[in-house]
Length: 128
Image (cartoon, rainbow, N blue to C red):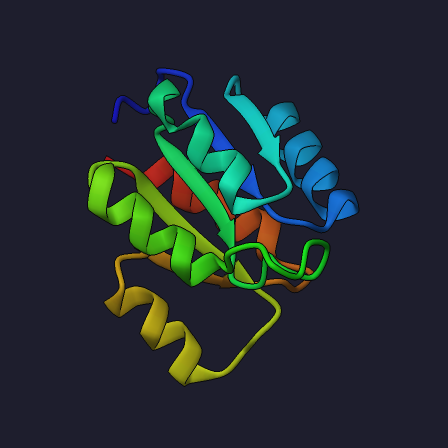
């Protein structure tokens, strides 16, 4: 991925305050095209737009209880769009959960803390 070229980024999280804040943060620092989705299913419908990066929440079903969770969405992305970079975002700081997401195909795992946005920005800049 060309570092100077704007990237197409999908943020997939049911926490609307977080998604808007992350979009604002990334938009102010880069020229990226950012789209927000509150469910994984909504994101999957738009994958033909071929995002460069998907920032995917581990827990997605708190708003819609029958919706797929982040791990299920990750598996669909990996199966059909293996070239899309996926950064898993979660409030879980358990090593086993982070390891599981990496084993299933996420490239990075970021804990939702006060440094999360800066970490995500750095990861996006470093992706090839």
